[in-house]
Length: 421
Image 1 (cartoon, rainbow, N blue to C red):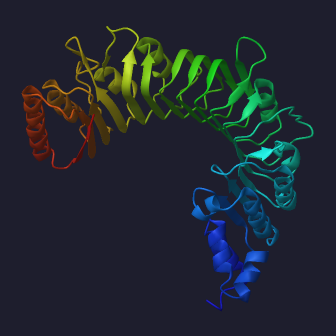
Image 2 (tube, rainbow, N blue to C red; image 1 turned 45 degrees about the vertical axis):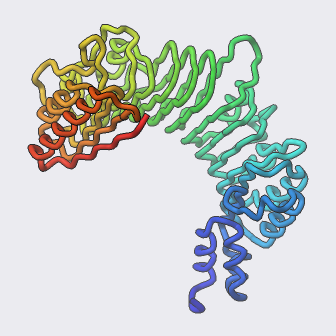
Image 3 (cartoon, helix red, strand yellow; image 1 turned 60 degrees about the horizontal axis):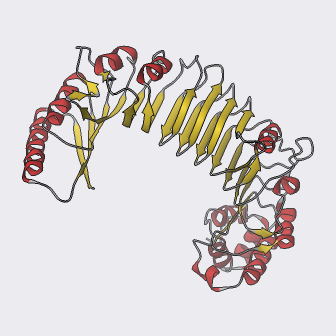
């Protein structure tokens, strides 16, 4: 170890992650102390990872963090996540940021201060590439002054910001590629909460736990769109057909529009969602490049609507991964077995049930016949803890049927995952 270059030791210390481990390791010898001062490029303080942090006062913790940061030179990554800590002094936090801002490339900041620290004003016009803010407030964004010329990834979680400031913030990031918006508190300017964002360089957006009347996004380079646990009256994506990944999970939306030119879609993942199938199908039917389709716990707006495997096989000939949850309503399966077309390219099949009956085994067998080149099948199911004699008999019949299928399709890796409800 004594022959290691001091730069390599700095890389080793930077990979430890937690600041406490870095301080302990740097006490090994004079050479390691030198590495921690001159060649440490990543430092992380997390109140959840370090129990001793809970046993000291915020003032004492401020002193420890200050001493550790000020012993370094050239930090590129700084993470300060203080979920369980009361307010810090704003002047102390500003001193940390001022000391490191010229070399910082990545900042993960979750610190409550009094008064609030304006991160944009301190870190703007620097070389920051990744910025993640939590439990903070942003007001009065000035794109010309608070500009982030190198920022590629922005994450805002539990942040208070107006719709206008959010739009201006994206304008101040000319190279932004990834955006995460989680549980934002959108300041209301009128009775209707509308967010309109435009970012020509944006490639990926993740939106979670946000309630809005209208959410409109204009992004000509967008490739990934993920909406989760949101309540929206209208969501509209305006682009030029670059979207490849679309996932929507537990979202309430009246009008959903992800654009007319979505020929490049490769993944569609829909779960815990009510859809108008004809409209949704019309939206994705031209996606001939689709490789993964997941429809899980999906409710249909019209009870008479069904999705047959023939439609899936014909419209998505390149499909390799298919995931469907089984539901029987009024004697009709939502994913019917009409037609004769095979799913020749499907290699992974995920199937699930919420309420099992004797028809489920038949449905699984027919799907196996259609997927002629299948390599892996995963079956998810829930079983109630209190089972009647009839339920036990259905479960026994299902188990026997699956065992027989596994013997028949020895080349298919089969996994059965059951949970209690």
